[in-house]
Length: 186
Image 1 (cartoon, rainbow, N blue to C red):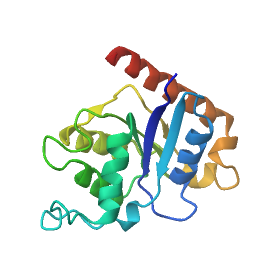
Image 2: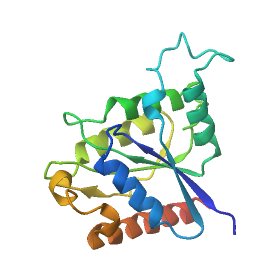
Image 3: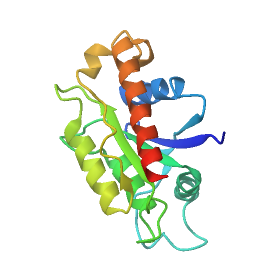
Image 4: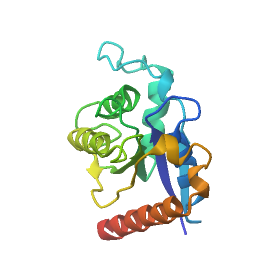
């Protein structure tokens, strides 16, 4: 059986980020036939600017992101909520992946959005904004794949998400939904 590659982009650049920890928990709980690859250099990608998005001159970090996305079967965005919306680093990655318009690495790519946030709703506003942005950018948004963990700073203060039984069970639900979306597309 061929492995399904899930490229995971974490919207938080902070060391010790609960969303980075959630991505690690997702990676650790992936089924054997799924390879979760966490792309860890969103902070190195310059802000999208059409003047520097020129064939042969695309910044190396942006080119590496595009290649990783093109080679992935599915994208998984793991996002915190910054002021009620998606963080700049993740939005910037979406912008780079959306170009060239109509033929970017996101075009038709199955994409899911999950995350955790300090607030009581677990970052659902940011997740909704990320779904909107990737959908407009051409991705096939997997609306059935959802995971929003509230109260992250308290909940994960002394426990890594990989050790939280409820979160692990929800992660299994994410993979079940990804599999369901994949089967429906086949």
